[in-house]
Length: 166
Image (cartoon, rainbow, N blue to C red):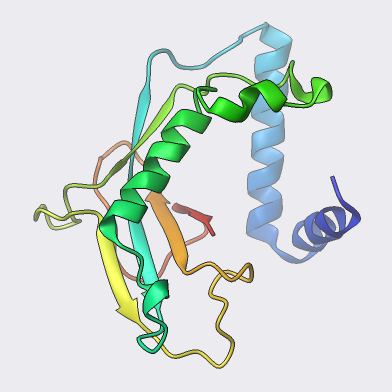
């Protein structure tokens, strides 16, 4: 872990009470599983419906990525999470014991919160003074609702309900 990551973690733990509480809960659950010798809390594949929000500047057409690009990246995730990615052979030895098939599959959501059909992709035009949406310069965000309803939510992304991947 880099020094910057450690500092970011420390900042979150000391300034964001919700983050600190959630982190403590995760640590406690992990410890309980380890103490009981439980390897996995679930079996089979967990399918996670995702919504891809393409936030783009209309004057920079390449930011408005295609549906094919989005589906391609979902495919990449679905190869990475079960350790099926071609570059797994170049995994550093120090991480070999940590790599595992997560039993997770990502799919584009097919139903919105009102039960209406969706393709799981939203597009928002925005002109920013600073062009990088996710600090890394990417214009793609995957917002996944962490529930088992299979529905997606709209509106402002809550840190408690969503995982944001930039």
